[in-house]
Length: 314
Image 1 (cartoon, rainbow, N blue to C red):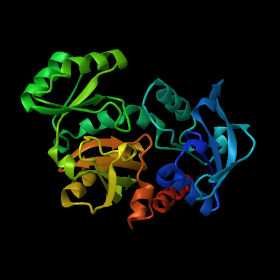
Image 2: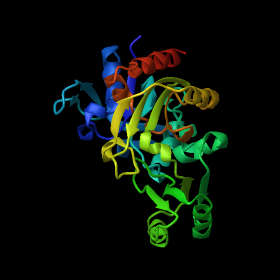
Image 3: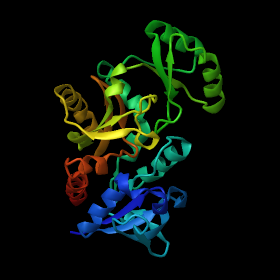
Image 4: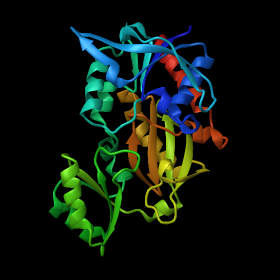
């Protein structure tokens, strides 16, 4: 049966379709005959317990610069949809949290993916701490003294904002770096929450692997190799994508976290792995679908909608 599917996302006019996972999902949903609607999070409202948004019917095509057509915006009760994909990009801030509270009111009558209450409780850099033996040594604090002690212990560390995304605000500090005090002053002035520090993993020079899991099972991976003078491997800051297989250690990591993902209703997840260590579990708006397929990997969008159709049918 065709489904009515809403995409809560950044405006479709702003996305770069060549590497956009949300767009890949939209193409697959349309191919299967589902009805697609589009709205941005600023159009989301709740009155007297009713959650609604000004949504637009959308059709998509895989043509850069001519990739979408939108219908007229119509105020629509979101319970009219069979499934809703929460796909606006982080950062994970109070606006993002508010959206999860509103969407929680319609789930699971309307299947919201990923589960909004669990997304709220599992931001990327905190959820991973439930598996301390799978991750590098990690400190979460706002204390400059604790960060200094952590650097003294390990000599070479990464420090970044706890709720950042896309590699923004990621710094490497060696034991002889003299910028720690200034960096902490900047962080304290910019972000009200704690920061995260991790032992630097030299294996990042060989790449930061993104592994995609559907309903707790690994379905594809891509390696992202940083530029020579760059600590970040994110694609939009110059990281180079390359095909790669999943190792035995990475399969072990996926086996360990899979039950927790299924229990929380995380249908689409991307984990980041450097060497033998998992550094993040991305549940807000995971990416990597198009890169995996580009290098001959699985059609992850198709696997995703196989699972959506099964769950929405129930």
